[in-house]
Length: 158
Image 1 (cartoon, rainbow, N blue to C red):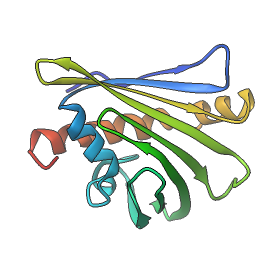
Image 2 (cartoon, rainbow, N blue to C red):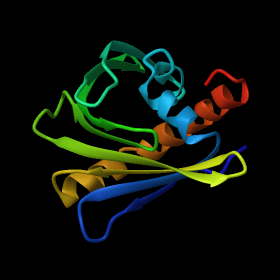
Image 3 (cartoon, rainbow, N blue to C red):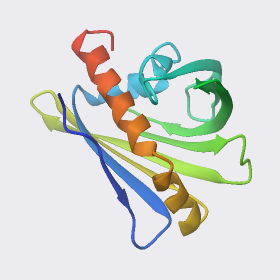
């Protein structure tokens, strides 16, 4: 079993940093984050179902999905600002709070020997918003999702 993700509150700006190493190439991780067939297989808590409404994974494209967890249906959407071989920049909006838009950046660093470090950070509107995200139990969804992604990578599905 892999180590859990390291999740940190930035002390100087309202941002959350997530670090996680994967036995994968940067290209595999970019694909896992941009392929609309793969994303629902791993992203989020293990007990949830995700349905992609639309997913235009290109610089300038947009996305939307519906999350169904424990009988609750929630919508999320955003725009892809940049997708490259080693970086994704996108917005993230929970439709229940449309005025709070996060700017998310993911960098995939090739560590050699088949390992890649993911460093993701989400810049939110306020320190209160950041702290609410951290208190929401997000670490469960992050770690469940990354464990499922590890399985997809090990099975050769990514």
